Length: 471
Image 1 (tube, rainbow, N blue to C red):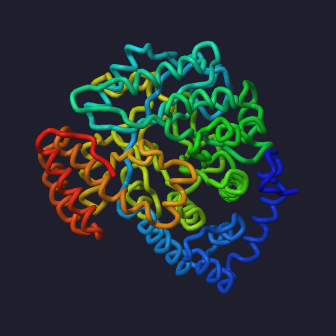
Image 2: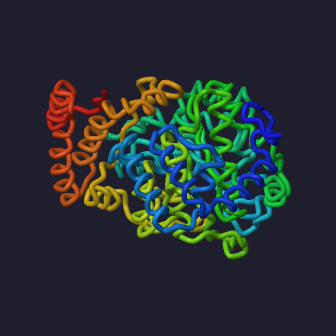
Image 3: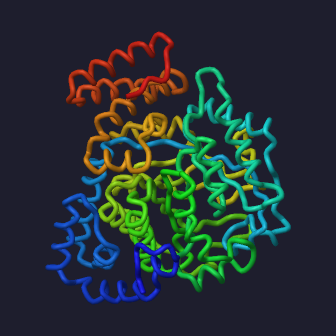
């Protein structure tokens, strides 16, 4: 039986409930009166149930789909403004004992060059990322208790936070590693991580077990219940995601929203972020072997429906997707993107992009400067802000501010100040010119006179060499 408050994976991600939801969505996909009712509810900015959102995803009426898209764009603006948070992944090790059939890191791939960064190499990678202008990283590693024990991950986090190069500093380290114990999550929390991210891959249990035939990741319940252990271990912010293309997208969509509902019901805090990756070509992995691939059109529809269903969450789109697709989907609710990314172990130190240790091919190969330039030219504010995390505005404290719309009062000026840092220290001349005009224009949008004056004062001090101001 479906029970959002249960701590058992098969209760809060209930197979029969998902099947019933999909049947209900099929029955009502052309029920315009019901669709209008659900859209009206979504306009209240309090979210939708997995069943309501599934009806919108199944909707075939093009006029209503455009309404959903417009609403998604407006809700994103209401909660996050025109800011887009920037980050980069940092791959520490591709040693892995799992046999996930969709990932080139799988243990049986004898052609994959295995590599694990030393602490000196971590330092070199971080300096390379700081030289680009990054302030926020998501660290990644395969699951291998011998090569990648929790102690190694903790040492890497410590190294990353210690490196101060010129005006560079990594101010937030998010962690994307395998499901682990409450004790280990507590160690990660004590190390000062930002968000703990774990992709479910697929919520369909039977498919999950076939896709993970061997290794600790084979345990569906242990993996699916990881976020509860993370929160019990003191991690305030967690990030969900599925790998679209492994199973039927409507099943995954319903499961993803049920997981968000579960976190709200049990912990009072839903997912800090939701990621929407699609399976991509990599090493010995051919995505055409999986028969559940989704079109760009469906992908955009999924993103818009997630935004209206979970209005408060940060939505992430990675460089797995092309520049063209990212430009199209970003208006539908995306609030975080990666830039200048490399998915190989030790890839940032290399002048040429290495491919021998890549987890997947990067489709958007633009530099961080090019991505920042593109975003600003499109009217967005690239944000390198980490203030909420560093000021303790995490978990329920962040969510209460976000849901009330109050987060804009600090996030908008913080975004402008971190953009100013980037422009002074790292930007090309053309990017700097575009950015200075954007900052001047956006400062005038700050409605609180005191905040506006303080932001302008801080920005003036940055011109004189000072850094790291925040509200």
